[in-house]
Length: 121
Image (cartoon, rainbow, N blue to C red; front, top):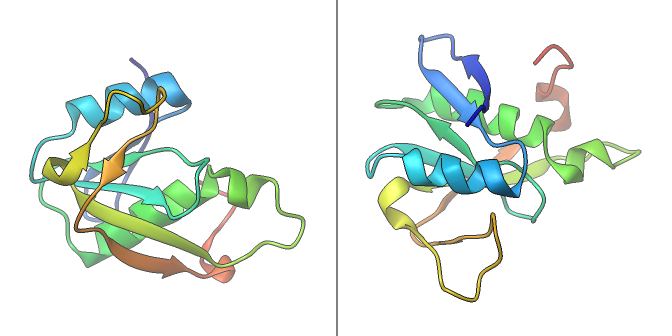
């Protein structure tokens, strides 16, 4: 499965799904203690930081997540966006959830200001 990918300033690989199918694959490959991110609203990729992530990695991954979210892409007036992040072990899937949809527990949040998102990602 091909994912969107960037490398953080600290050298961490950051992966993002492209659609419901790749979001499923991305969540499946995320390790228990790796950080996974998703916007608070539906319609964004799941994003996984490979390895142990610091605050700067989380911020970069959150910006990457927002950049490809429907909230950001479809807005004419670009908003600040709330992103949730959590460990891979805190993701669950009920049998009634559609493809690419997951539940999470113990999520933390970060707000990405519109000024922080550059078009060069």
